[in-house]
Image (cartoon, rainbow, N blue to C red; front, side, top):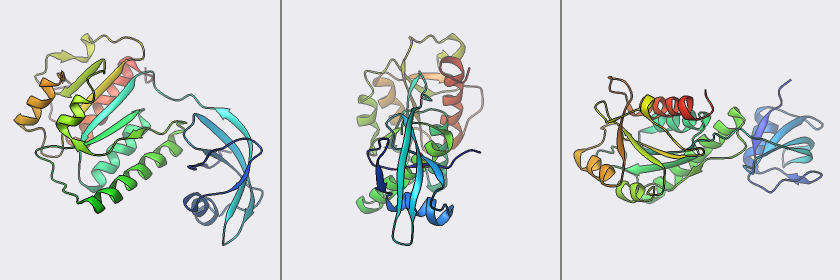
Length: 245
């Protein structure tokens, strides 16, 4: 039987007994209704899974004992960063969830010229916290031992310039010069894929990306929605250079 896997943002070590954070306690004790003596798997993003047993479950708290640690190696050899133009609500959630499952190591949300989502500081903080919870949940489901980095939302120029050290920087372009079949990459390459918001990259956005070393990559003749484009590109790159082969 597959054990429930749950993220906890705490240091973990065998033989340690501790009180679970509220979110994990609620999930295990109230949603899944685990009881004292039930076992689960905990992880904190350090690359290990921790077999655990619940030793106390009540209305006030849930306590767990760590039984053992097991290294988890499910990270792609391809170090993928997704620069994603901020999309509306469930679309952004879908992108983050599925890209995490596909092995993306880092997310950089960006405000582009055609970004339709405008958030003030308070709403932005709440949205970023929500995005992180989506990523963590995807790690729980997919078995990843490392939680992808979620960078604070930034302007496109700042985000593009921050990727200058990456081996390959790509934006999807139906008439782009690069084709997946013709690409070569060194082992453990760092690849950045830039995907525009619902309205796509504006001419000014494209100028910024091209001036920052991004190259157009062809990925079929069809125009893809923002929630499809990045996932298709990531899956194709993983199949060609990563661990989906």
